[in-house]
Image (cartoon, rainbow, N blue to C red; front, side, top):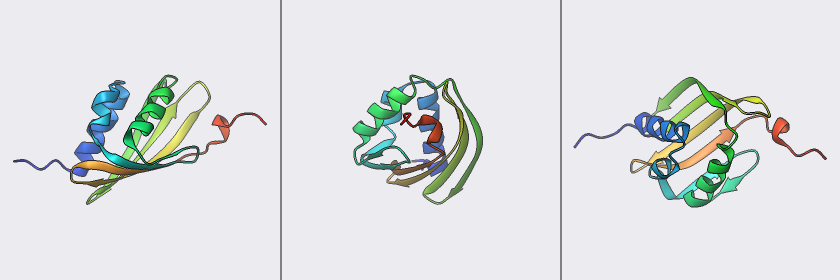
Length: 116
């Protein structure tokens, strides 16, 4: 049996999102996925997939910048192109048992904030 690297899992997950195949993207996530970002936090993969599906409704594109990996930790840097902004994003993925168990997302959320 060939062991899939953490980078391969994250790459396949990202490609599923890019093609808007949310069922395939969900298959790479542990049920108890912990997501932490500047706007949302989730403790269940299904809740996260619901939110990311809505976000991808407005995504025009994703420009990959770099991927850095060490063991079960993978960092991905990209520019998210939306009608609101072209936002530089950093995501830190942690894997266990071949599944993504934690995603920490970092970006400037100000362009996405509701006007006060």
